[in-house]
Image 1 (cartoon, protein in one colour):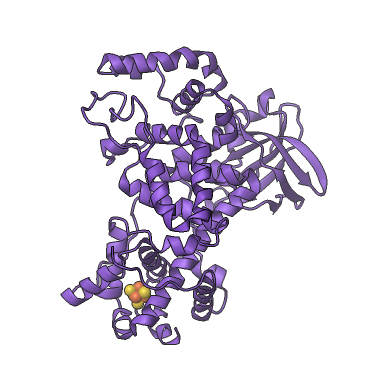
Image 2 (spheres, rainbow, N blue to C red):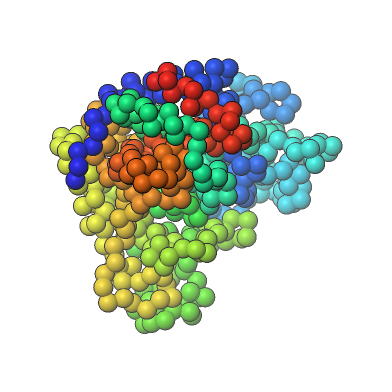
Length: 486
Ligand code: SF4
């Protein structure tokens, strides 16, 4: 493997890139570089998951001007009733405990019949999205079946940052960008220093996101949720995130191996008669039968109504990456949780072995059924298949474990720069084309600058900060001119 370019000290370079953005967008960095979430959530479930992860913050003002502070986000409710239970909040300084309901619109409270349902009498806060122009005329009051008025909180969806990878529906044109000329004439050391700084900035942002979840739910829960999300990749990221929030690590670790497997597959909606009936072979039926023997005792604890059900996206997903196999991978990670933590800790003692040891850890995850099955409906394969493939492993290391390690190990950045690049996806391909060009020399230059994971992340960061923010076909983009300041 070729030597990676000399990395800059961390996190000084991240600050340098931050300052660079501040120079470019002097009025307000947060506003100018904030890439807002899509116009509306994918579903009510996304709103609830992002609320529970603390992405909206903890301090608010209610619709009638009261000061609200969330002390405890509580737990996802598995049964019928409000979305979250055992919540603790301060309302104008007075501590209140109870349940919390999160909905897309204020009017859903009545539309869903909560106002006449005694199960919702314990709700102390009704959370919904700020009214759109369409619904602005009507003002809804939230009342319980006992005619108690519930404090309302309206959230601004646009205040959120875009939430990780989504199916690509917005890609700037695939063509040469105006910045390619100054980038080409930039001395190599300066280009490397820019790439290193943008990569550190991105790594630090990911570490910060993990820290925000850790501050609410604890360090290990934050790591567990991030791993689940990464296993869900683009299409099933939300479902995996919600599953890991509903079945927290602390709960799963207390269960026996069989119970754990049953909870995960049952709560995901895979232990039912339909899957049993459609299974192709005796091994699968035996496997499901074993899970069912435990699940029937617990299934009533889980509300499987349409509102609560997880939706798994299968379109365009290769059988190897089927969500059932991803669940199995998550299960095996929990089964070997202490080993993962130990491997991460060992990285502090032998930093140069961090990547190898983590890859060995993922390669060692085995499951007697899932190593040989694509899905619950498929025939067994002759050859064993890895539960976490190379690409996913790479992504988990780069997007989850190294951001987590940056807070725990002083060598994390140095080791991160040794992580080889992943497969080039459409976003990265476009970033390279716009920033470097398409003639043979430019292609070689781009290849040289995306060999390592940190380089790829740097290019994606620049693409995110500038290309995605541009709507002038490069004409008004400040990046080319500002490069001389680097
Ligand atoms: S939008 Fe800016 S950063 Fe992106 S290709 Fe054009 S000039 Fe370069």
